[in-house]
Structure formats: C-alpha cells, structure tokens
Image 1 (spheres, helix red, strand yellow):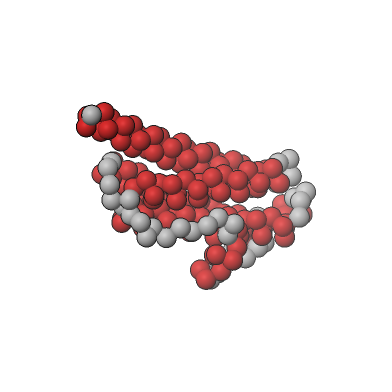
Image 2 (cartoon, rainbow, N blue to C red):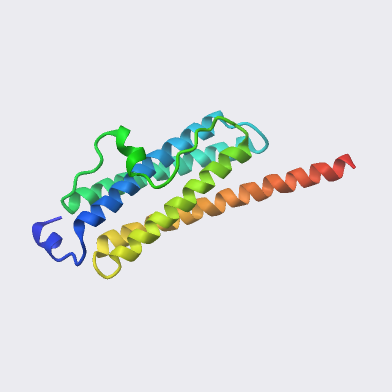
Length: 170
C-alpha cells in the first residue's frame, strides 16, 4: 500500500495490525488443527470427512496469506515466530489426543466460531474506514461461516447414524 493510501485510512492502524496479527496466529493454528486432526481422525464417515477437513486446512492457510499481505500493505510486521502464535491468538488450539471424529469435529467447530467472532470484529472495525481490509475480512468470514455449517452438518449426520443404529438393535 502506498504512503498516501495508509494516510487516508480512518482508523488506528496499530490496533488494526494487532487484530490482524491475532487473526494470523489463529489461522496458522486452525490450519494445523484441521490438518493434523484429519490425519489422526478415526470413526464413522472418516473417509468422507477427511478430504474436506484438508480442504478447510488449505483455506485456512490461504486466509493466513491474505492477512500477512494486508499487514505488510498497511506498514505492519506480521508475527515472525511461531512461538508467538498462542500469545496472540484468542482462539484455543485443541490437541487431537482423542482421535474420534466427533471430538475432532467439535474441536474444529469451536475454532471456527472463534474465527467468525474475530473476522466479525475486524469487519466492524474497518467498515467505512478501510475498504480493502473490510472486504478481505468479509470474504474470510464467509468461508468461516461455510466451515461452521459443514461441521455442524457432519455432526448431525453422525448423530442420525447413531440413532439409526440404535433402532436397528431394538
């Protein structure tokens, strides 16, 4: 972003950079949570869900790329050391110590809801003040909302399978 473009931003760029660095940390953690969870996951529907979780992981990585580019454009420095991710993240990282599919999906659902909150905050903070960041945050927010819907649908499907299995056993 050119110097003039930074000057016309009608917001506190330091605060925005802090918010974006938080989002950056959360995207890296989300990427890894999806990626490793897909690899260790066990249980019903694994073969259907695993490739989709890997797509979600790739989308989280793409979000990180967008956020880094925006931080640099507005004159900031992205988090340079992964050891800082947990410090800057408001979203928890849940180790997939229980590989059961429902546990993995619920961990990812919590992460998605946190990401939705983050991008909603960025969108509100930049609305009418920084159109580029606002548009970026809305685009990412829409993908996070899709991820939440996907996960909720898989969890419903698993519950329905459980209920159908119970009926068969009766």
